[in-house]
Length: 214
Ligand code: FE
View 1 (cartoon, rainbow, N blue to C red):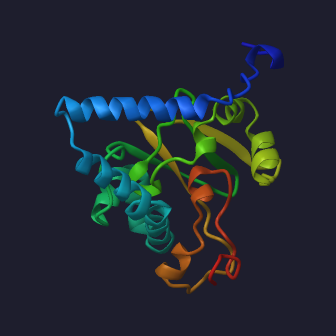
View 2: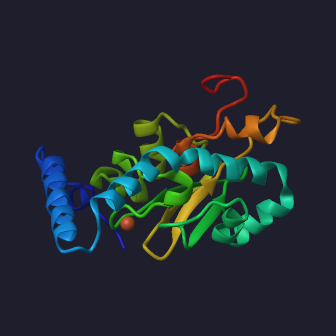
View 3: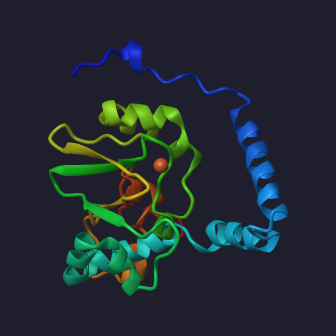
């Protein structure tokens, strides 16, 4: 099947889109509270958890362990949700996670073309660009160009790029390559090199000495 640029160009984002969505969310929340389906406290607690407690630092921890423990790495690639549970990491939107491993010859990128499915337990809530129609439509057709133009990440031509489309059933994330020059580093220091973008596949892990605070 062939596609043309013009037939699949994403529609320009509507300026009121975000405000409209926020208003709808507020209305829905108010209705669910009024009907007794949930409480304000529960909503606030959930927002707090995913804003402050759950985030890419957890995915970084899992990654650092996989880099230093081959058996754990094998279990992570075989069943990511079960391997994360070993570290006490799991929960909402993380029931069926699949980890895809970057190698010398393959680079992986994740997207949800339909909406914004994302592995919350290891990455927290998705960034806005991940939910944007522009990323969702273009990264599938032109991953190399999107990584270069939008993220400043140049993937060598010799490396194949695989794009994984997440869904409500399967949520992918990436095991990035361990940076060179990190032999003998502690798991904690290695975790400090893992970026959110590297877990999505739109970037790579920091080289030693390049991460903030190191
Ligand atoms: Fe989705």
